[in-house]
Image (cartoon, rainbow, N blue to C red; front, side, top):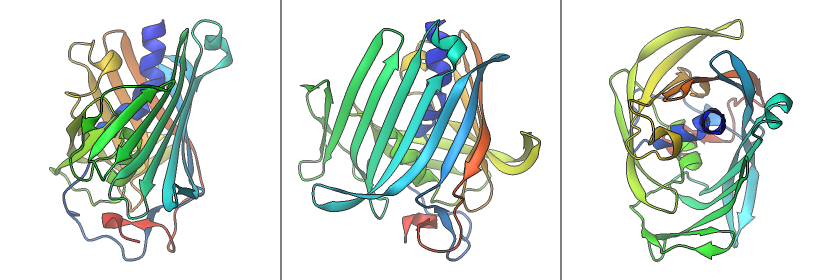
Length: 271
């Protein structure tokens, strides 16, 4: 049961392997923001036919970090009250990036999965071009960073700022503090899907799981599929993952603070 719930609660974060270094494939609508502070997306997480819990993606107001203004993103995931009695999951992940969405500055992960707990901080030192990982204050050796690297959550938000088109292959360096790799995602096609009684025009994405750890690395033929809206926002509408212990689905159930013309991040990461 623990392996199953870790996969369900962690599925949204695994999509952070899909990064975008290339220029937009389609001309973006002028002045439309992909996201802005106040956006809040809520997902129902299911394993097979069992409701496992919820995950939330939020864009928080810009903050000040070590004397500089930064963007701030948060992912929270947790099991419901029924599954709490079997295997409680409470995870909170924060990403801090520069204002132009060019690279990450800080990554935090507070993790509770059954008896396992973590308090992870990854500092991106761009003067030394290294990432330093600590867990409960205990450091690992620094890892070398590729230019423009993001943490997994920050990388996902970066992807939302670039244009997508069928057949596109997109790459971007990603680091979790333990390693720095080149993430890759393929745009498989454009599809209309129905979620929560609403039809969405979407792109179906295929992230490369070669460098994704955890339950995905332990499952033969593991796979993640992601559907994002085909408008300027590229919001994740549905995510499916298949691992050894079954299939997991996360679907959008609430969308508030929607981006609109005005201040925020637009295509290409420019304000």
